[in-house]
Image (cartoon, rainbow, N blue to C red):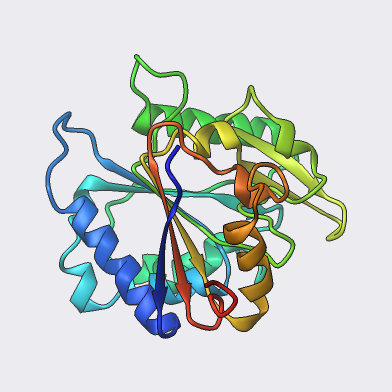
Length: 247
């Protein structure tokens, strides 16, 4: 696949505005097949700024929410009311403020005791909205991903079992260093996407961004390096602080 595109912005605000504009541009025209647009959202501080911007009149009025379905990239196995819940963050930052039709946000029910059943149920929702009978994996139109200082993305952490998952679209993943379970989209779904946008901001991300984007062997060193869509694009949006070690 071609090398990922790298775009650098002055700060998080400019990065978020560019990402919001990209989403508005992608969802503007009606899809040739008539299907709704499917977009997966990550948790974390950096994406939160994007979601708050999407909730403003400037951007919300430009997006045809009736033709958009929103999914989660991953979720902590906590109640949806928990301060740690990605869903709660997304709801408070954006969902409560936009005209998204009922049923167009697909929440990961990661609080369910049967995590395998919750994963299978979520995979079925993905399949219903996004799948084409001619392809094996759900094909999302756009996935926003973050980047951890350890190189993880989604809830695909170094050394975790989900890194090797090849049969399931969604699976539970035990994160040893955090002592918790999460549900996550797997590589087969990430790598079936039409577009991936990494959102990376802050000086604490500079070194891992350098290692990932300037490594001579960007194959399997870090989980984020294994996001390589077979028929899609990858773009990295970084602010200047996160990009300071990139030539």
